[in-house]
Each structure stands twice: as C-alpha cells, then as structure tokens.
Length: 128
Image (cartoon, rainbow, N blue to C red; front, side, top):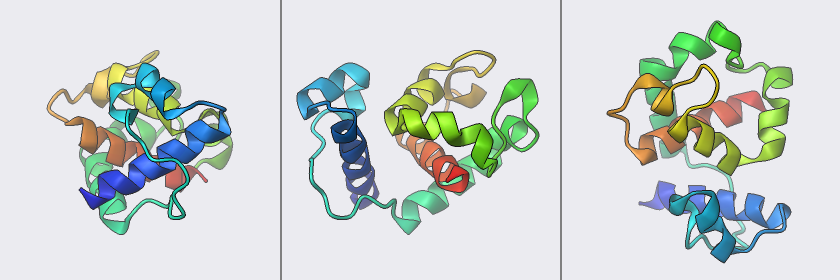
C-alpha cells in the first residue's frame, strides 16, 4: 500500500506540473483519482521498482529490450524523452490500454493495474 501512495504522490506532482487538479485526474485514469498534491517524497519506492523490474523481466522485455515494432528500448534516454515529458499518466494509459503495436498490458492480460504501474515506473526510471 505504501508503494501505491508513493506512486500517487509522483503522479500528483506530474499533474500539478501540467496544471491539472486532483478532480481532473480521474478523467485521465480512474486510478489517479484521489492523489495528494504537494508530497515531499515523489520518488518511487525500492519495493515498487523491484516489482516493476520483475514485471518487466516477465513481460515487457520481449519488446523493450530490442525495440520491437518501435518500442523504446529500456534505458535509451533519447527514445524515452518524449514519453517522460508527457508524464507518468501518459505512460500508464498507454500501458493499460495499449497503443500502436503495443497491446493492452503489454500483451499480458493477467497483470493487475498495480503491476502495470510498477513496470511503467521502473521503465521511466531507467529512461531518465
């Protein structure tokens, strides 16, 4: 639960940077509703990054290790720049719903929203 709070804090800070209020967050993705603005600790937790690495190794690596169908490679800062600039809610929405050649949840429908969020967080951190 603590890892979700940390992620919500990071999402809230990103929403603030975009000029959005918490009430508008729900329109982007229901799981962003109720975020708390102004957290002093927006960094993802070690537990979330570990979970994200596990999900990445089980699903996301298949495309993001080699750039399959234009997927940005893990750690390629130039390839991730535009996604990072768009913010975590952009990446979470893409990962949950799919976009372009990427299927919803990276092709693994058994992943929970929290697991997808952890993988997105992990990949964002590697792309910074």
